[in-house]
Image 1 (cartoon, rainbow, N blue to C red):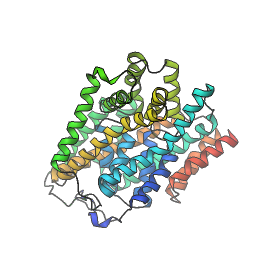
Image 2 (cartoon, rainbow, N blue to C red):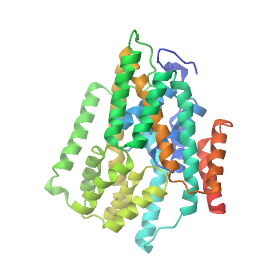
Image 3 (cartoon, rainbow, N blue to C red):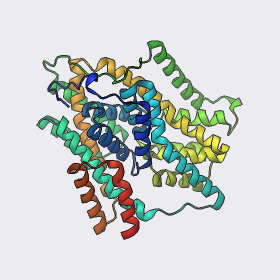
Image 4 (spheres, rainbow, N blue to C red):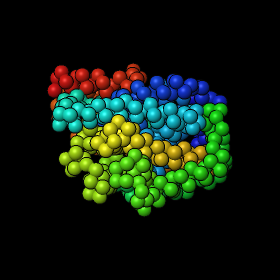
Length: 409
């Protein structure tokens, strides 16, 4: 796809049309193999939707990651929602998010039923150990491909290196927020002079975006969820379906910073305040979220299942992912309206460079947990070569690594 030096991305007409069934199938495959945390899922989405299918540009993908990092809720699902929205409007956002969550939801519910019936979870240690070097390779290849497209000089390289160093040295949500804010300011200062407004790709779909009334109603609904979470109505019951929706829906809009940052707040509420699960059960729920593909917040399905069976698992899952996804679509639509200005494009240029550094830092964090073994090095190098040299589809990398781990570890 053609690049523009003024920071604008391709026009919407340059993108191939994507059907809703194709979106569903693509993200179903991605969701079934998305082991290794939120950055692994994002990296697979980048590999499939940008590198291989060329449905979106690198710039649009980086904008989605930046926005998802700033908003509450699970970053990976928010990025998936943004990609679906950019391709097919609100319908595409819904289809993409549901497809990405369904495989892990089914697996978590099945293991939860197993746990409550027999009291233990099957061990998947060797396969999971082999996933980690493969996931690291996927993230490194994603950052490399994005960097080749978006880092055009020393200032952007410095922003990327600085962002990676800060996250590795300090870390945390507030540091992430500071990185994005400062990078936007640096981008505006360095690249904003004489920056003219350029053509920026709108969503590559024909669906009409939400009206101002729709946006207002959306924000009112989300505000009501937070209000009911903070000041619950006495008639909701202690473990009713309505209480499940209000609790997980309200929490989802107050969770910033990624999966593991969410755990203390959720633990305090569902174990300490509501007594929905024991400490042991909560630890098991988190473990299931880690050993299954998809976001760790699918642990909510475990808690919902204990309270209301399959219906409770479904309600908890919809409540924990739905409100942030709705907010992501609304914020994405607002970004579409303002990012065509030259100054916003300059700020985004700095933010994109910082996000690339943040992606590299995620690879380093995962690499530190990789088991020291000749197979780990072989999987990492082999996966990296397959992705960068042979452009192998990323959804095949992790399953093959898992098989190798079971055989050779």
